[in-house]
Image 1 (spheres, rainbow, N blue to C red):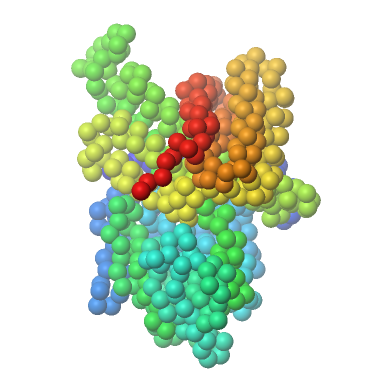
Image 2 (spheres, one colour):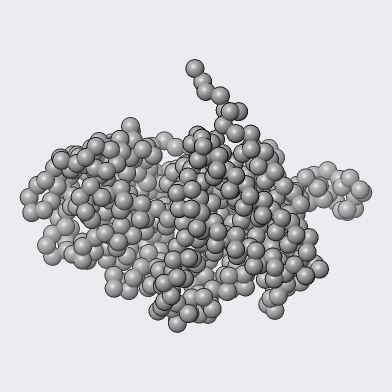
Length: 592
């Protein structure tokens, strides 16, 4: 069983000291009430929910898993999940960032991301049930009619219903242009939906009275490929004119997947057999509608990576402090003990510092990106909104692709700290490793994120967000280059950011001459960019911690030590990725 304590101190530091969210948010439209006191109060309550309600269910639910009845298609979730969902709904957590006009609280997205980390650290599998509702809500909010919003959105926001996204089919994974699900026109503007969808998280469960599926399908006269996809609302139970639930719709789970991890989340095969559905948005524009929600979904998956890495870091640090094993190479440290603890061994400290550097650096990146989405949505100045939107577009593939890959390294290193005890299920490390694996696949694999970063955000969109971010780094380095304590970090950051700029320009020119250079270099470019982005946030973290009047001496020293470790031992990894990029596509011969 793993322990979990909500990392409120570092969340507060990241939000209020590093990002100064109170100043930013209260200057945005309708943001005057988004003060430090309000945001902090929400964080504290979310921490209690995670520690007291969700975290205790994590290990038992993984063992129990979900139960599927093939005769009825019903799914029973693990013990404690219903009670946890009731507490979640009654606490108003489902409505946190939703608009007030739909029953929401209209709190900022940056707070929503911070709360999501706490919830997901408590129990990632459980968190997927309400998380998928957020995507459905975004679809309804952006593309639904007013009647559809009142019928379907409000009950989800109230926590009475949940939502799903039904996209993937057996033959159509990331290439949705291959999907075969079809929609035939029916009575009163409805459609009969036919087809099979796979990998549908929370597609069936017993937590709420209804489930609203957002389904991609083709109309009879639809063009071939991705240009002929429409989106439909398909409820589990049909809705009567007065809003009450009617007959069961013809959509059922035919199986739940047997997965490597997240055993307590029902990942379903969903069959639609002339299920009644309703068009949302414009015909043949379903794929475009889906992509309007993609930034939020990908950011949410990045937060999941952080959440698991945080729990892994907490437990491996606790274990290293308590576990007695061997003696310090420079002499015994615990004279009255049979052995020294694991912290005396340099390589154990390396593993722990790696985790800490990735966890706290990722938190800064993710919350910074979430804050940009708030600026994009609610800044009064159009140029500020445009700049924030371009920053979000640039950072999202890094926030999703890079952070979820770092979660793999963090959980692996945590298990390594435990040694053989990490491989034993009772200690919970192996569950974190298993659960983390899906995160690099959700919402597009890491390769897809890398292609999006280099192919779309750098080349197709002319690197606008990249230029904004480089300018921010340049301004930061100029401001603090005279600081004696920071000079070693600032000099390295300034040098590497200039190399990043030059490498990007050279790579863009190569891709113009040979398009396959993009695919050959995209993954290494993602890693290179990710390490540079985290270096910037670590340098900023040192500045912000040193300037803070609220942080303790030990807190400030830990930030400085971890930043120094990151710049000395992690940032040089960029050299390997640069060498791989410069080797070119010719080093990837074709297979017969």
